[in-house]
View: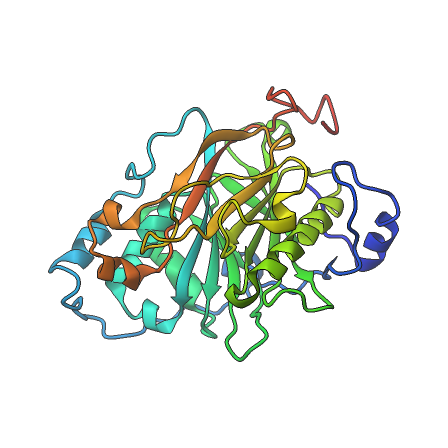
Length: 358
Protein backbone atom coordinates (compact mmCIF):
# COMPACT_ATOMS: atom_id res chain seq x y z
CA UNK A 1 0.00 0.00 0.00
CA UNK A 2 1.32 3.36 -0.90
CA UNK A 3 1.39 6.17 1.63
CA UNK A 4 0.53 9.82 1.28
CA UNK A 5 3.56 11.88 0.24
CA UNK A 6 4.42 15.27 1.62
CA UNK A 7 4.81 18.21 -0.72
CA UNK A 8 8.52 18.16 -0.10
CA UNK A 9 8.75 14.54 -1.17
CA UNK A 10 6.71 15.29 -4.27
CA UNK A 11 9.10 18.06 -5.20
CA UNK A 12 11.98 15.58 -5.07
CA UNK A 13 10.06 13.01 -7.07
CA UNK A 14 9.26 15.62 -9.69
CA UNK A 15 12.78 15.32 -11.07
CA UNK A 16 12.83 11.55 -11.14
CA UNK A 17 10.64 11.06 -14.20
CA UNK A 18 7.55 8.95 -14.56
CA UNK A 19 7.18 5.32 -15.55
CA UNK A 20 4.21 5.58 -17.85
CA UNK A 21 3.61 9.06 -19.23
CA UNK A 22 5.59 11.91 -20.70
CA UNK A 23 5.19 15.60 -20.03
CA UNK A 24 3.27 17.50 -17.37
CA UNK A 25 4.49 18.17 -13.88
CA UNK A 26 3.53 19.11 -10.36
CA UNK A 27 3.42 22.86 -10.78
CA UNK A 28 -0.37 23.03 -10.84
CA UNK A 29 -1.52 20.24 -8.53
CA UNK A 30 -0.08 18.64 -5.43
CA UNK A 31 -0.97 16.19 -2.71
CA UNK A 32 -2.20 17.88 0.45
CA UNK A 33 -1.06 16.79 3.91
CA UNK A 34 -3.06 14.22 5.80
CA UNK A 35 -5.89 15.27 8.02
CA UNK A 36 -7.95 17.07 5.38
CA UNK A 37 -10.48 14.24 5.28
CA UNK A 38 -12.93 12.90 7.81
CA UNK A 39 -13.02 9.17 8.43
CA UNK A 40 -15.84 7.02 9.64
CA UNK A 41 -17.21 7.12 13.18
CA UNK A 42 -15.75 3.66 13.77
CA UNK A 43 -12.30 4.58 12.50
CA UNK A 44 -11.54 7.83 14.28
CA UNK A 45 -14.45 8.82 16.48
CA UNK A 46 -15.03 12.06 14.63
CA UNK A 47 -18.80 11.60 14.70
CA UNK A 48 -21.16 11.50 17.62
CA UNK A 49 -24.00 9.03 17.79
CA UNK A 50 -26.10 9.66 14.68
CA UNK A 51 -29.38 11.42 15.26
CA UNK A 52 -32.77 10.51 13.81
CA UNK A 53 -33.71 10.98 10.20
CA UNK A 54 -35.08 14.39 9.32
CA UNK A 55 -38.77 14.60 8.52
CA UNK A 56 -41.89 12.99 10.01
CA UNK A 57 -41.38 9.45 11.24
CA UNK A 58 -44.57 8.19 9.61
CA UNK A 59 -44.46 10.22 6.42
CA UNK A 60 -46.35 8.87 3.44
CA UNK A 61 -44.76 8.89 -0.02
CA UNK A 62 -46.02 11.65 -2.29
CA UNK A 63 -48.49 10.80 -5.01
CA UNK A 64 -45.63 10.39 -7.52
CA UNK A 65 -44.75 7.09 -5.84
CA UNK A 66 -47.31 4.29 -5.69
CA UNK A 67 -48.69 3.29 -2.29
CA UNK A 68 -46.45 0.83 -0.47
CA UNK A 69 -43.26 1.88 -2.27
CA UNK A 70 -41.37 2.37 0.98
CA UNK A 71 -42.22 -1.14 2.17
CA UNK A 72 -41.32 -2.70 -1.15
CA UNK A 73 -37.94 -0.97 -1.28
CA UNK A 74 -37.16 -1.86 2.32
CA UNK A 75 -37.83 -5.52 1.56
CA UNK A 76 -35.52 -5.76 -1.46
CA UNK A 77 -32.73 -8.33 -0.91
CA UNK A 78 -29.30 -6.86 -0.37
CA UNK A 79 -27.80 -8.81 -3.26
CA UNK A 80 -30.65 -8.56 -5.75
CA UNK A 81 -29.38 -9.31 -9.28
CA UNK A 82 -29.40 -5.84 -10.78
CA UNK A 83 -26.31 -5.78 -13.00
CA UNK A 84 -26.07 -9.46 -13.85
CA UNK A 85 -23.98 -12.22 -12.29
CA UNK A 86 -20.29 -11.58 -11.73
CA UNK A 87 -17.87 -13.62 -13.85
CA UNK A 88 -15.35 -15.06 -11.40
CA UNK A 89 -14.26 -13.36 -8.19
CA UNK A 90 -14.65 -9.66 -8.90
CA UNK A 91 -15.27 -6.30 -7.29
CA UNK A 92 -17.94 -3.94 -8.57
CA UNK A 93 -16.83 -0.33 -8.40
CA UNK A 94 -19.34 2.43 -9.16
CA UNK A 95 -19.62 6.18 -9.43
CA UNK A 96 -22.84 7.94 -8.51
CA UNK A 97 -23.75 11.61 -8.52
CA UNK A 98 -26.60 11.66 -6.00
CA UNK A 99 -27.97 15.02 -7.07
CA UNK A 100 -28.06 17.58 -4.24
CA UNK A 101 -27.63 14.90 -1.59
CA UNK A 102 -28.68 16.72 1.55
CA UNK A 103 -31.35 17.13 4.20
CA UNK A 104 -34.29 17.43 1.79
CA UNK A 105 -33.49 14.12 0.17
CA UNK A 106 -32.74 12.51 3.55
CA UNK A 107 -36.23 13.48 4.78
CA UNK A 108 -37.82 11.27 2.10
CA UNK A 109 -37.50 7.75 3.42
CA UNK A 110 -38.74 6.13 0.20
CA UNK A 111 -35.91 7.89 -1.67
CA UNK A 112 -33.34 6.91 0.95
CA UNK A 113 -34.44 3.26 0.83
CA UNK A 114 -34.00 3.31 -2.93
CA UNK A 115 -30.54 4.86 -2.61
CA UNK A 116 -29.56 2.33 0.05
CA UNK A 117 -30.49 -0.58 -2.20
CA UNK A 118 -28.57 0.99 -5.08
CA UNK A 119 -25.42 1.24 -2.96
CA UNK A 120 -25.74 -2.42 -1.95
CA UNK A 121 -25.35 -3.46 -5.59
CA UNK A 122 -21.69 -2.43 -5.51
CA UNK A 123 -18.62 -3.04 -3.38
CA UNK A 124 -17.42 0.57 -3.59
CA UNK A 125 -19.34 3.66 -4.67
CA UNK A 126 -17.73 7.05 -5.26
CA UNK A 127 -20.43 9.57 -4.40
CA UNK A 128 -20.49 13.13 -5.71
CA UNK A 129 -22.65 16.15 -4.84
CA UNK A 130 -23.08 15.70 -1.09
CA UNK A 131 -24.47 19.16 -0.41
CA UNK A 132 -25.30 19.32 3.30
CA UNK A 133 -23.46 20.63 6.36
CA UNK A 134 -25.21 17.95 8.41
CA UNK A 135 -22.39 15.68 9.58
CA UNK A 136 -24.86 12.90 10.38
CA UNK A 137 -26.15 12.47 6.82
CA UNK A 138 -23.67 9.83 5.70
CA UNK A 139 -23.47 7.93 9.03
CA UNK A 140 -27.28 7.75 9.09
CA UNK A 141 -27.31 6.64 5.46
CA UNK A 142 -24.83 3.87 6.29
CA UNK A 143 -27.08 2.68 9.12
CA UNK A 144 -29.91 2.34 6.62
CA UNK A 145 -27.69 0.49 4.13
CA UNK A 146 -26.46 -1.85 6.84
CA UNK A 147 -29.94 -2.76 8.07
CA UNK A 148 -29.69 -5.63 5.58
CA UNK A 149 -26.78 -7.12 7.52
CA UNK A 150 -24.08 -5.62 5.30
CA UNK A 151 -21.15 -3.70 6.78
CA UNK A 152 -20.51 -0.57 4.74
CA UNK A 153 -18.22 2.20 5.91
CA UNK A 154 -17.01 5.44 4.33
CA UNK A 155 -14.36 8.08 3.95
CA UNK A 156 -15.41 11.61 3.12
CA UNK A 157 -13.63 14.73 1.91
CA UNK A 158 -14.02 18.29 3.03
CA UNK A 159 -16.59 20.71 1.59
CA UNK A 160 -15.40 22.23 -1.70
CA UNK A 161 -16.51 24.87 -4.17
CA UNK A 162 -15.76 28.38 -5.45
CA UNK A 163 -19.22 29.69 -4.51
CA UNK A 164 -21.44 29.55 -1.46
CA UNK A 165 -22.70 26.22 -2.79
CA UNK A 166 -20.29 23.59 -1.48
CA UNK A 167 -20.08 19.86 -2.12
CA UNK A 168 -18.31 16.85 -0.66
CA UNK A 169 -17.07 13.60 -2.14
CA UNK A 170 -17.28 10.26 -0.34
CA UNK A 171 -16.35 6.64 -0.92
CA UNK A 172 -18.89 4.14 0.49
CA UNK A 173 -17.54 0.60 0.64
CA UNK A 174 -18.39 -2.89 1.85
CA UNK A 175 -15.82 -3.66 4.54
CA UNK A 176 -16.31 -7.40 4.01
CA UNK A 177 -15.10 -7.08 0.42
CA UNK A 178 -12.51 -4.29 0.56
CA UNK A 179 -10.50 -2.30 3.06
CA UNK A 180 -9.28 1.27 2.77
CA UNK A 181 -5.83 2.50 3.66
CA UNK A 182 -6.85 5.47 5.80
CA UNK A 183 -3.34 6.92 5.51
CA UNK A 184 -3.82 7.14 1.75
CA UNK A 185 -6.88 9.42 1.80
CA UNK A 186 -6.26 12.98 0.61
CA UNK A 187 -7.60 15.83 -1.48
CA UNK A 188 -5.62 17.08 -4.46
CA UNK A 189 -4.09 20.51 -3.89
CA UNK A 190 -5.02 23.13 -6.47
CA UNK A 191 -3.13 26.38 -5.75
CA UNK A 192 -4.03 27.84 -9.16
CA UNK A 193 -7.75 27.09 -8.68
CA UNK A 194 -8.07 25.17 -11.93
CA UNK A 195 -10.89 23.04 -10.51
CA UNK A 196 -14.00 24.11 -8.63
CA UNK A 197 -13.93 20.90 -6.59
CA UNK A 198 -10.56 19.22 -6.13
CA UNK A 199 -10.69 15.41 -6.45
CA UNK A 200 -10.69 13.06 -3.47
CA UNK A 201 -8.20 10.18 -3.53
CA UNK A 202 -8.13 6.90 -1.57
CA UNK A 203 -6.40 3.54 -1.92
CA UNK A 204 -8.14 0.20 -1.34
CA UNK A 205 -7.29 -3.49 -1.20
CA UNK A 206 -9.59 -6.43 -1.87
CA UNK A 207 -10.36 -8.83 0.96
CA UNK A 208 -11.26 -12.55 0.79
CA UNK A 209 -7.90 -13.34 -0.77
CA UNK A 210 -4.27 -13.74 0.28
CA UNK A 211 -3.06 -10.17 0.96
CA UNK A 212 0.02 -10.84 -1.15
CA UNK A 213 -2.26 -11.51 -4.14
CA UNK A 214 -4.99 -8.96 -3.40
CA UNK A 215 -5.90 -6.30 -5.93
CA UNK A 216 -4.78 -2.87 -4.70
CA UNK A 217 -5.98 0.25 -6.46
CA UNK A 218 -6.34 3.98 -6.05
CA UNK A 219 -9.64 5.74 -6.74
CA UNK A 220 -9.78 9.41 -7.72
CA UNK A 221 -13.28 10.89 -7.79
CA UNK A 222 -14.11 14.19 -9.47
CA UNK A 223 -17.08 16.39 -10.43
CA UNK A 224 -16.33 19.00 -13.08
CA UNK A 225 -18.08 22.34 -13.23
CA UNK A 226 -20.50 22.31 -16.20
CA UNK A 227 -19.66 25.93 -17.11
CA UNK A 228 -15.95 25.22 -17.69
CA UNK A 229 -15.93 21.56 -18.65
CA UNK A 230 -13.19 21.71 -21.30
CA UNK A 231 -10.74 23.47 -18.98
CA UNK A 232 -11.44 21.15 -16.06
CA UNK A 233 -11.24 17.98 -18.15
CA UNK A 234 -7.79 19.10 -19.32
CA UNK A 235 -6.84 19.81 -15.71
CA UNK A 236 -7.88 16.28 -14.76
CA UNK A 237 -5.16 14.98 -17.08
CA UNK A 238 -2.66 16.71 -14.81
CA UNK A 239 -4.45 15.34 -11.74
CA UNK A 240 -4.12 11.83 -13.14
CA UNK A 241 -0.41 12.34 -13.68
CA UNK A 242 0.08 13.74 -10.16
CA UNK A 243 -1.69 10.82 -8.51
CA UNK A 244 0.19 8.34 -10.67
CA UNK A 245 3.51 9.95 -9.89
CA UNK A 246 2.91 10.09 -6.13
CA UNK A 247 1.55 6.57 -5.79
CA UNK A 248 4.78 4.79 -4.73
CA UNK A 249 4.43 2.15 -7.41
CA UNK A 250 0.64 1.70 -7.42
CA UNK A 251 -0.21 1.61 -11.12
CA UNK A 252 -3.95 0.88 -10.87
CA UNK A 253 -5.36 4.41 -10.83
CA UNK A 254 -9.11 4.63 -11.50
CA UNK A 255 -10.54 8.08 -12.15
CA UNK A 256 -14.31 8.11 -11.77
CA UNK A 257 -17.07 10.63 -11.39
CA UNK A 258 -19.30 13.15 -13.12
CA UNK A 259 -17.18 14.64 -15.89
CA UNK A 260 -19.99 16.50 -17.69
CA UNK A 261 -18.44 15.16 -20.89
CA UNK A 262 -18.92 12.03 -22.95
CA UNK A 263 -16.27 9.47 -23.89
CA UNK A 264 -15.45 11.33 -27.13
CA UNK A 265 -14.77 14.69 -25.50
CA UNK A 266 -12.22 14.02 -22.78
CA UNK A 267 -9.65 16.52 -24.04
CA UNK A 268 -6.10 16.03 -22.79
CA UNK A 269 -7.32 13.35 -20.39
CA UNK A 270 -8.52 11.23 -23.28
CA UNK A 271 -5.21 11.67 -25.10
CA UNK A 272 -3.02 10.27 -22.32
CA UNK A 273 -1.38 7.10 -23.71
CA UNK A 274 -3.28 3.98 -22.74
CA UNK A 275 -5.98 5.86 -20.80
CA UNK A 276 -9.51 4.77 -21.74
CA UNK A 277 -13.09 5.37 -20.53
CA UNK A 278 -14.97 2.23 -19.56
CA UNK A 279 -18.44 3.56 -20.38
CA UNK A 280 -19.01 4.53 -24.01
CA UNK A 281 -21.93 5.12 -26.33
CA UNK A 282 -24.69 5.02 -23.68
CA UNK A 283 -26.60 7.65 -21.73
CA UNK A 284 -25.77 7.95 -18.04
CA UNK A 285 -28.29 10.55 -16.87
CA UNK A 286 -31.83 9.80 -15.74
CA UNK A 287 -33.44 11.66 -18.65
CA UNK A 288 -31.38 9.47 -21.00
CA UNK A 289 -30.07 12.24 -23.23
CA UNK A 290 -26.50 12.75 -21.97
CA UNK A 291 -23.40 10.72 -21.23
CA UNK A 292 -21.60 12.54 -18.43
CA UNK A 293 -20.43 9.91 -15.90
CA UNK A 294 -17.57 7.47 -16.36
CA UNK A 295 -14.74 5.38 -15.01
CA UNK A 296 -11.30 5.86 -16.58
CA UNK A 297 -8.28 3.56 -16.32
CA UNK A 298 -4.81 3.06 -17.80
CA UNK A 299 -5.64 -0.12 -19.73
CA UNK A 300 -2.09 -1.58 -20.06
CA UNK A 301 -1.66 -1.40 -16.28
CA UNK A 302 -5.11 -2.29 -14.96
CA UNK A 303 -5.34 -5.79 -16.37
CA UNK A 304 -7.65 -6.56 -13.46
CA UNK A 305 -10.52 -4.96 -15.41
CA UNK A 306 -12.88 -7.81 -16.33
CA UNK A 307 -14.26 -6.17 -19.47
CA UNK A 308 -17.67 -5.71 -17.88
CA UNK A 309 -19.02 -2.22 -17.24
CA UNK A 310 -22.22 -0.28 -17.74
CA UNK A 311 -24.98 1.91 -16.40
CA UNK A 312 -27.30 0.90 -13.56
CA UNK A 313 -30.79 1.73 -14.84
CA UNK A 314 -32.60 2.92 -11.72
CA UNK A 315 -35.91 3.46 -13.54
CA UNK A 316 -36.03 -0.06 -14.90
CA UNK A 317 -34.69 -1.76 -11.76
CA UNK A 318 -37.30 -0.18 -9.47
CA UNK A 319 -40.07 0.27 -12.05
CA UNK A 320 -40.15 4.04 -11.57
CA UNK A 321 -41.58 6.78 -13.69
CA UNK A 322 -39.23 9.54 -14.82
CA UNK A 323 -40.58 11.86 -12.13
CA UNK A 324 -40.01 9.23 -9.44
CA UNK A 325 -36.49 8.48 -10.65
CA UNK A 326 -35.59 12.17 -10.70
CA UNK A 327 -36.48 12.38 -7.02
CA UNK A 328 -33.68 9.89 -6.43
CA UNK A 329 -31.15 11.61 -8.71
CA UNK A 330 -30.79 13.05 -12.19
CA UNK A 331 -27.90 10.60 -12.72
CA UNK A 332 -27.70 6.82 -12.95
CA UNK A 333 -24.72 5.04 -11.37
CA UNK A 334 -21.99 3.82 -13.72
CA UNK A 335 -19.97 0.75 -12.79
CA UNK A 336 -17.19 -1.62 -13.79
CA UNK A 337 -15.89 -4.98 -12.55
CA UNK A 338 -12.33 -5.82 -11.55
CA UNK A 339 -10.66 -9.03 -10.43
CA UNK A 340 -10.06 -9.35 -6.69
CA UNK A 341 -6.57 -10.61 -7.57
CA UNK A 342 -3.59 -8.43 -8.44
CA UNK A 343 -2.54 -9.29 -11.99
CA UNK A 344 0.60 -8.69 -14.00
CA UNK A 345 0.82 -7.12 -17.44
CA UNK A 346 -0.16 -10.45 -18.99
CA UNK A 347 -3.24 -10.80 -16.82
CA UNK A 348 -1.75 -13.54 -14.62
CA UNK A 349 -2.21 -13.48 -10.85
CA UNK A 350 0.75 -11.68 -9.31
CA UNK A 351 2.20 -12.25 -5.85
CA UNK A 352 4.07 -9.60 -3.91
CA UNK A 353 6.20 -12.36 -2.42
CA UNK A 354 7.67 -12.96 -5.86
CA UNK A 355 7.81 -9.45 -7.26
CA UNK A 356 7.61 -5.87 -6.09
CA UNK A 357 6.28 -4.45 -9.34
CA UNK A 358 5.00 -5.23 -12.80
